[in-house]
Image (cartoon, rainbow, N blue to C red; front, side, top):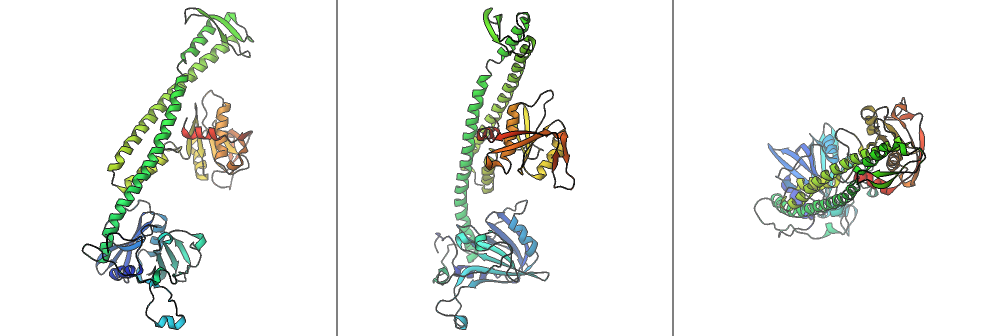
Length: 491
């Protein structure tokens, strides 16, 4: 057999693999699932330890001995946990490939003839403490699967849950060999280069193929995710720098407040303008716009407030620009390092973190999501557990609570600012988040009620996080996708 191995083993090769492994009588000491498409049985027989890899990859489904120690995730994946619960500590009583039905014969005549070709479905019978389970392994390319059943064939769970094929818990698994298909073809065991058993040759060949192919795929995936992150960061930086330009003359607000204060005698409540000599600019004559409903002193304070808010806003924008620039530098360094990265686990982590970084995340120690509606901070609990945790430890009585009326969904909390009322823009931000993270999202429009946290009462005997609001008010929200996108991007 040349190095160009097909996508899956044929039935004769599977028979040879099983013959060399001699699985009956082996004790299953441990099971782990290093990645999403394969798992490993760690076995003991005749005083020796050995491991068997079962790969259910659509590209390279297979079963063979493995000597390389694959990573064991700190938290076991779902199927590995199932197999541990039912098979760990058990004994393999039988291990064989099913035989396909013979064409041209039926009944006793078919059974009396020579064994029919195998169908790439392997049956492992395992007993443990009087419990008998069957692990079925189907090596059919895109239809590859591993299914655990009890002795009567009822499925306990499947590696790939496929409802259309009835391969889900509670259904009866009926293996269906191909008739006249691949199993009936006259395959042969092909020659592999190198020394050792067929299992050992398979491990070397597949390791080489997967190492190269997987690495190329993972590098491409990681680079794509990083490129998306880089473009997103550049777009956000451009917006923030444009906003920073709006703060270029923030000192002028303070100057206008000083000019009004110095000319309080020249204005009265109700005046739309105040004519002054601008002593900041060589006493040039100018007019300052006034709010008619405010006194001259209140108008001066209004300009001072604008100056303070602009100064805080500029500081926040500058801080965010610095953070994004540092993140952008890290992303670019990661892209440059991809070509030299040979660690598959590291590449998966890079891709995952790049995608994750584009989503709104909770600050350290805070459940749920955190958004900014300057100068207010908004907390969103997406589940009953997050809602309950936020209520218990992250919000106070004067904070605000928003929730979509008549729709199950998130609790949205706006952290109160001392001496500040809740502005309409922040209310709209919180209301949009309440609708967006509710089942009313697709309706596009919904009522949202809101009240202070101190007016929430826990409902006795209800599900975790359930509250009964009092003194609530209502706001009608038409979902604004641009507002949601702005909040998600942290602008």
